[in-house]
Image 1: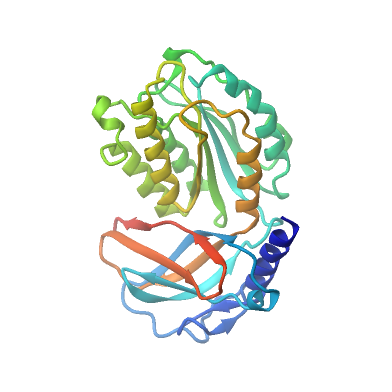
Image 2: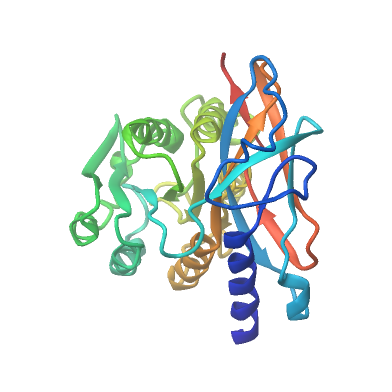
Length: 324
């Protein structure tokens, strides 16, 4: 484990000192834009910023991790990386912590660990605390840099069926919009939910059928927000079939926004501690990558970020929806 952490640290150190511009291997400062080497800007081109998580797979010799070669493509076409920002565990994060209000009572035991996680965030991070419930999002704490105040805003979920939303993704969309007034840079949501959307009937609970899930993905991608989902069952819904559908929805939400989804079977997890440890590691190795998109057309644009460095895995949004 110690060796793995050293390798991860080497990857991040390399990214702090190396940037990639046109031609995939152009070297520049990670904190500056590649304006002096960028090609003439095509008509309609504009910057796109996405969160990218870095994970080290296996144990590779240290010399192989001295250089991390990144490239990005959109709709299959190579794009120019303009900057790599907010690298490492000292960079502020804008985070919304969202907890569904009808989750089982055992989730109450996880409130303190979530609070401790908030207090350990980098200095000047901004945190919002909200609860997903019937009707609308209940914001217990607006975005604040007072991490202790944000942690104290947490409370146990009500754990009653009438408190739960018919679709958690409606309130997730509401929370996403609140990022508009926040600084650019690293952005994330920690969503504790059963992931079940029955707002349009049981059939809408499928990951491929939920309209609100798709809207949440589109809105998060457009704003560069990575969503990390902790699954926990609600008090009213214990069906294994519905739980499988709900977990698939959370998995899709995380995968397509550059985050991760966490499960322990279809029941309530014994503890969130392993989730929070893994989440902390993911956030410590997350970057905000800005590239010049050369595809001005409306609609969905697929993104692929690659590393030629052996042993490096990347987590990033599957793409984004361009509205205009």
